[in-house]
Amino acid sequence: MRERIVQDLHEVGTARRKLQEQSELLERQTDELRRSNLELEQFAYVASHDLQEPLRKVASFCQLLQRRYRGQLDDRADSYIDFAVEGAKRMQTLINDLLAFSRVGRTKNFAPVDLNVALEDALGSLETRLDEADAVVTGDDMPTVQGDRTLLTQVFFNLIGNAVKFRGDRAAQVHVSARHQGDEWILCCTDNGIGIEPQYAERIFVIFQRLHTRDKYGGTGIGLAMCKKIIEFHGGHIWLATEPDRQGTRICWSLPADVEAQDETVEENAEGVPADSEPASVGTEDSPHAAEDDPGKV
Ligand SMILES: Nc1ncnc2c1ncn2[C@@H]1O[C@H](COP(=O)(O)OP(=O)(O)OP(=O)(O)O)[C@@H](O)[C@H]1O
Ligand SMILES: [Mg+2]
Image 1 (cartoon, rainbow, N blue to C red):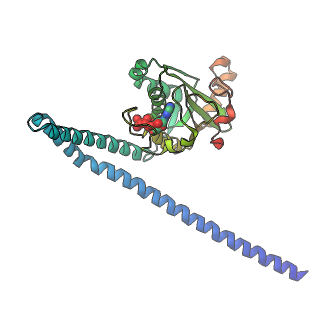
Image 2 (image 1 turned 90 degrees about the vertical axis):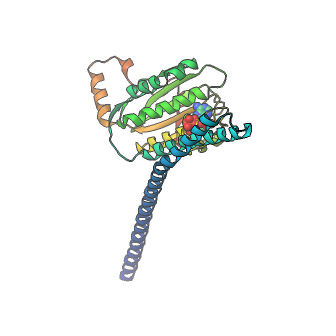
């Protein structure tokens, strides 16, 4: 009996040591990963920042050549210069995008953000594009969350901008929904455009990855990568909602619910604010298949 107890104690001791070793290893690996991630971000930032200056020079001298010497050399020389100008401009756009991308998350100034205001701001910036496309954008009542207002506005801007750009032949109809689920908000931007094949669900969020050529639809492929970085910086995630027979595209993202703001809403409602001023609940017109909005399904 005593031997058994000693044996058991020995086994427990060994298991505990192993567990300790494993957790130390995990901690070291996490530290290493964090460090290399930081280094990579730093690299992207420095590279894109320092490349701006020499590139500006190349671009402006190519443009000068184009302006001063057009027609003085032969046609071939003119078109070479045009290519150089176009290439330099494109590189400037890519570098500016990369710089903006690597800036996300460098400083954290979170405050309560009323997403109704963020959505309004984004729609204001998109006004010309929306008019040109005869787009109709509707939205649920939005919650207030903790976050960076500029960045959260940019998410709406990029997603609604995409919905309008990739509208196909029809006038764009876009709906932005919000519903409360557990301790987070699930927001979705749904359009009636050309749609995205489910096999590209991951690829569309990778920086500079696009599914179409530039002459068909303009852009560098930064929008969704930016949204992903912003949402993850806010402690949420973003995904393409894939449903069989879905026409158009639905991109959903989660954001941690601001507990204090929620309490305030509950109190306000208890004081007699009309029920229709509450945030929309599960099963609103934009989420008939609530389960399909679940990130676990993608
Ligand atoms: N609403 C949408 N409908 C159809 N395809 C889309 C939609 N949103 C994104 N995509 C596809 O995903 C790709 C990546 O989107 P993303 O916003 O990152 O880049 P972009 O719009 O092409 O360029 P940028 O955002 O830099 O202007 C797009 O090129 C397009 O192929
Ligand atoms: Mg885009």
